[in-house]
Amino acid sequence: MIQSVYSRARERFDRFFDNPLIRRILKNSGYLFSATGISAFLSMLQGILAARLLGPANFGVLGAVTTFTSTLNRLASYRMNELVVRYVSHFQEQGEPSKAAAAFKTASLLEMGGSVLAFGLVWALAPLGAQYFAHDVGLAIWFRIYGGIVLANLISESATGLLQVFDRFRSIAVITALQSAVTLMLIAAAFFSGAGLFAIILAYMTGKVLGALAYTISALVLARQSWGAGWWQAPFRTLADQRRSLLTFAFSTNLSGTVSLIAKDSEVLWVSGFLGTVPAGYYKLALALANMLQLPVSPLPKATYPELSREIARRNWENVRYILRQGSRLAAAYSVPVTLFLILFGQWIISYVYGIEYLPAYPALVVLLIGYTFVNIFYWNRVALLSLSRPVFPTLVNFAGMLLKVAAVYWLVPVLGYTAFAGILSGYYLFTVGIAAARVSLDVRRGTASAGAAS
Image (tube, rainbow, N blue to C red; front, side):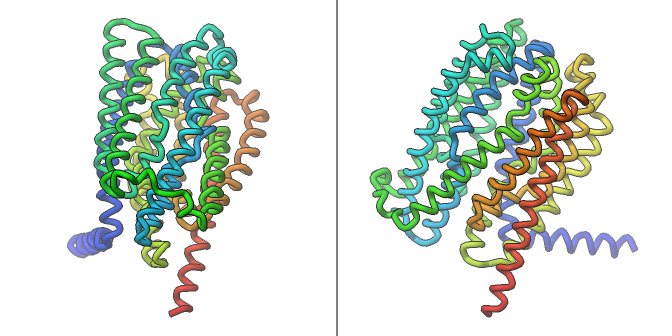
């Protein structure tokens, strides 16, 4: 009996890793996971030191400063890594390197414009951010100083996309880990020297600037190696037949990013604006612990996206189904046990690691884990839609979810307090990811049926 169970388990294990697509995805994810794991561990140490040094109120201010800049940066962002993966991969597969170079150049120029715009927004709106989110207008100068990371990230999204296209996941992993290590060293120095909030802000800023520059330099070197020294002279006219779809893709992903900012990526600002910096400090910690659930899963979309784009371009629908199915199984095998662990031991972790004053973060953590687990299992929902040339669909779904979420915030938060934000976010994830995954499933079934009828 035991031998039979072992044999079946071994057979399933071998079959799971038999497909070369899964092996390649796991290999590339492995590079990113190694970096993500190291980075997450270092980030956790950063968070512990910063939380203990600053206390809940200033920890909330730190969250307001960093989230304010990242929110405005993403507001002007076109998610150029996704555009680069989609179009550069396509042109490389079609044997058209000149078009691939032109697509990367177009993405880089669009991103530059967005970055300059974002920095201008940070500079102009810093006094309002300090007044309404940090509740101290005197902190406006630090909102502006931290906003300098936007200029360092001029083409970092496009650069990351190019590294993904050419399977330079090891480079991404190394840069990610080194960035976190530098940040941790600076925060540790601030902690042991008894420095305050501003030293922590500078530590985070320095790490992000160095990481962005490293991505950019690596991608420019790769572009030269792949397309020659004059790659940047690739004419835009080679993309004339793709101009409409490329711009539609860019602006739809920008709109989708804007919707995501309001709906899920600016949570600390919402909490701080509605309830103050102390609840924001609790919620920032709850989000940080919930993000532990995404550690090994977060690299999977980046590694899966190029493979899905290639297989869909080749009309290999069985491979597409295999990638999605096995990816969900792999994510669930990790997510469910970790969720249970955090529910059982979350209070102990918060109390003994961060300090008993942070215990009010636990209820929000438990509620967040519901939505995060669901997102993990269907982690491929967005990249699959982009690969299927449906960049507008997730935008529409997220927009509907955003309207419902904002309405729920004004309805529930005054009654239930900051924990309501966690419940609303989890509900948003269940709604939007569920619809997106269903759309992907329908398209893949239709593609499979069409391929079968054609043969």
